Length: 211
Figure 1 (tube, rainbow, N blue to C red):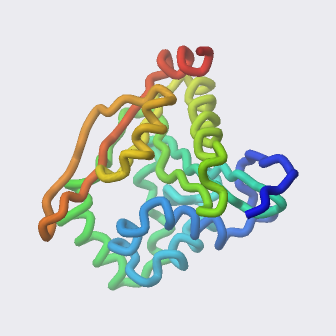
Figure 2: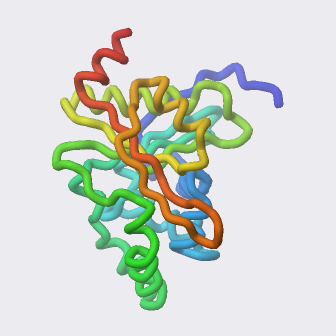
């Protein structure tokens, strides 16, 4: 693919300027198996509706985008820990059966494979994704660096989780100073599913940022 000569812009997401569906599709690509489990065949539609709203962890107000030639090619969702469980928008986006299914999935599976509580005043990268046609160009690293800069500005610890099988992403996070602090996993149908939680403290952020 021929690369554009235009620079990549890194911006807070704007509902007026950025295609919501494109953003939702990238969030979906960050963890397709998880989103299929939660939302089934309606995953991208549900995520699109959530991005448009303000009271959920996928809201546009928490999203940074990488934009090239007016196209969103990368996203990072950076959520204050206090807002991770703001689920008010789910009542409007999901029907009764979908809300019941989500409650069951959380109780029976997600509680064992994801960490749900983080210390007050910290930040959590809920999703990080780059379009397949623009990977290996440093976009993910730049989005992560901007999240680290936000953590420095807020004097906050920054957390991120990665699928236990995604060693490539884990190596990227560790190269920027993140360290594994917890692994949550279960065996399901002969397969290990789960996540590794990594963190970088404000002091470590400053050291890595200045090195």
